[in-house]
Amino acid sequence: MSRPGPRERLLEAASDLTYEQGVHVGVDAILKRADVARRSLYQHFGGKDELIAETLRQADVYDRYRRAMDEAGGRPRDRILAVFDRLEEITTAPSFRGCRYTAAELSLTDPEHPAHAEVRAYKDRLHRLFADELQRHGHPTPDAGADQILVLIDGLLAHALTRPDAHPALAARDLAEFVLDQKAG
Image (cartoon, rainbow, N blue to C red; front, side):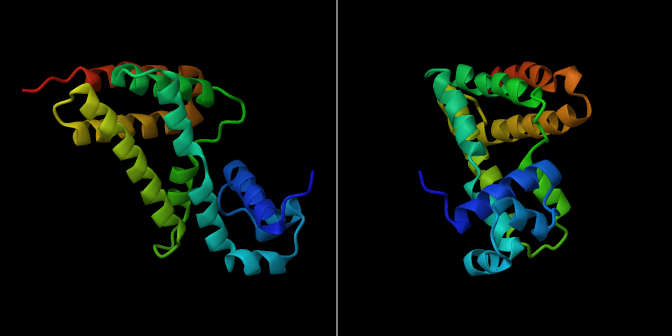
């Protein structure tokens, strides 16, 4: 088995370290973990900003939501609630450090940082995922319902950092049922 190339090692190191320590982790720490020279960073990404943006672009978090839904079967209600069940597992794991996208968005003060576009694209994809499921479910306002679901998810991910023993994913799941039960007025 061959060792991954410098680009892949940089992406893996940056992904791990920015999740563990935040996006302000030092370049030297990333280079050390990746076991590459500084030149490789600039050759492949042009600098740390683009490396961070690329780690967000390649993160498989969206796919985890999709997999949780797919494993729950075909009923939209079950598919959406399965996300909260999966988030209960994730947020109670010792390795949980919150949402990497929200953490990046809050940490990066430069409005021109390329990671902001990746965060928005990710959140838009999640919104579309939930809006589509809510539409299949017959929800009267799937876009507004998707916004409500995302507020619940963002809130539980933040709350789980400060009060993991409160099991915020289970509380948010109960609230998600109210969103799912809305009827056309």
